[in-house]
Image (cartoon, rainbow, N blue to C red; front, side, top):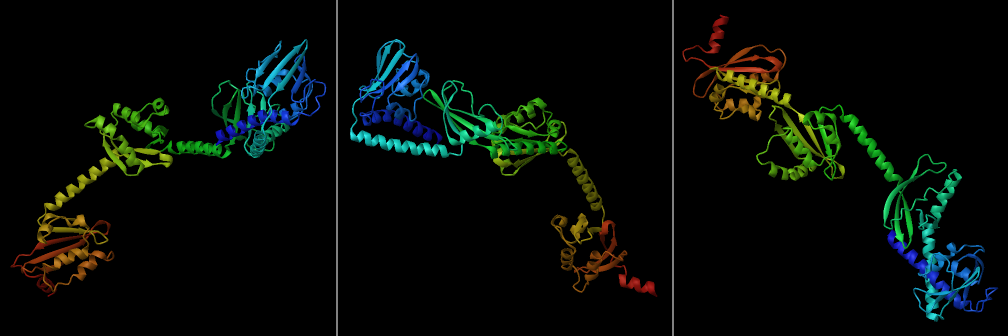
Length: 505
């Protein structure tokens, strides 16, 4: 859009400058020629020793403003060079004629007489169609000029000497405010490097009454031998970048004491943030990490340091890293690495804003060791329980089965360990009811397991459907749990009620 505005504005301005010369030559044929000796159809400028001493009124129309006396040739030449491209830099010392680049019938004649030089422009008459078109172009050019001046962003044009030849109102306003602040030059007076190519850069401007600097993104475009500059306010962007830097610094300080290694890669897969724990866990040099390596180089160095398990085919695994990144961005990447050194790492991928991805590296060797030791103790406990002939089962304080031995599973016809399914005392009683006398009252056993107060060891007798009798001993154990043991009573043994009656008598 900026390039389009430049093209329209400059093209329209050039057309107006050229066409006004032709138009006003025709419309002012009857104008008085003052002391230039010009015919009514001529546009004449008289110079003495390279400075203007007199002109016809048409010159004011050509420039859009009066040409002050004593104006040097260097200031007049750029106006004429728009149409007469072969015009030399220095004022010619002899008579010559130069045709216009857009009309061979229009001539710039230069006559030299001692210290005096006479410039005259003669052209053919214009048709009414041309005159009408020039008027329309002039109106359009004036409208575009008003639009450019109303632009809230500064726009200006500089020549090859670094002089500002045009600017809009926003540019002039900032220059005026800078002058009020005591600055000797306009802050937008950038230096011309001579490279006629489009360029971008940033500049900051300090204005009176402003607590902070104003930041602009300046874009330049070459237009002929000049350069047009566009300055766009980017205060919000600069503030956002500053806030982001502060946030990253805060994160770095926060994660500095985190025992988990953190590596954040941006959307270009470059390492942009890491903490000291990452250096300790990966044994990667700080200078390597500070150079912002890419994701592949990062894992390559980890492999060289033997800080990751050696894959069967590293080349294929390296190609799968893109799948790893994709999984991490979807928050579904997690792996456990068993290293040759005996350490165990948990690698987790997490998505971050703007396409970034973070990897968390955690040393879980102690956790794995504790888990293995706990599992070993569980296996040992289970092995001890299985060595008993009695059927044993343990329920937690919430009435959930936690342990049982093989004799218990065989007694009650259980195919697998019920603890896996978190069998409750209610479920266990239902399975016991199917194999016992229907007249058995199970409420007392249920209430004992679920009651945490006034619990003393006791025992009861159960009768199976087969007629066999079981002695069920129930007693409390640690943490509110309940231990139950089932053992067969010999057939000749008196029943439990008989034993109790004899004890009372």
